[in-house]
Length: 244
Ligand SMILES: [Ca+2]
Image 1: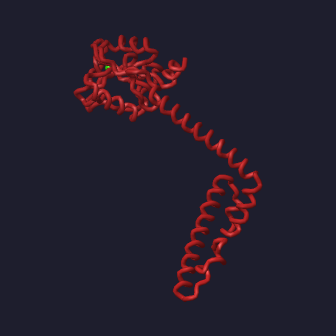
Image 2: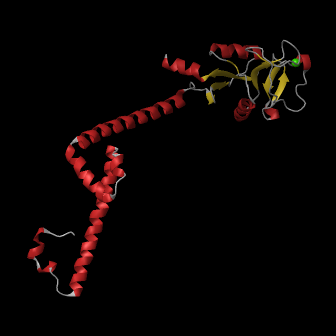
Image 3: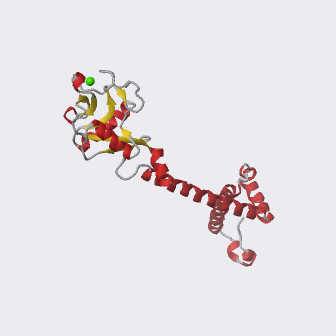
């Protein structure tokens, strides 16, 4: 099957003994496998590059014939170049998208603020009364933290434990005793993270605090006592500040 042009001028290709015949046939089989495998590789590459599904569905022999026809047409070359440009463009776009995603994740909260889900939190290092703490948060376009789910509350509790100290959050029963509500919209708090036995200060303790001694669980305390505090804002507010 695979023979050089000089085949008929060489005695090698006209073996006399069975041993030489076997050797020549072995070489022929090896050459046949080499060519066949390369056809498969070439057609596979072609199918990928040109999207020629029709070619891909044919037998290897048919692929080889069709491949050569398409290669000569020039259309394949043009189509391949276009697809290569498109693939390159898509790769660049994906890299850019990934870079933007990383950039946004790194900067969605301002320096010093901690991100959890869709909010940014500031855990203060200074202490203020509950109402002054709320004022400080407002200066930074935020409010005292208002955990709306147990997951969010557990995050605040856990993070406060790493900081050390007690932390005010934006929940109180200042307006109606024992009606614990969020400060921003006065809606009743539906989650309960009070430490067992809390709240227990009645009308003297009306502000909610994450007690360090209670592993960060809630307690009621005197609003006029200075404590650390947690401010919160949503991520979009911080992104707007960055973009603007
Ligand atoms: Ca109270």
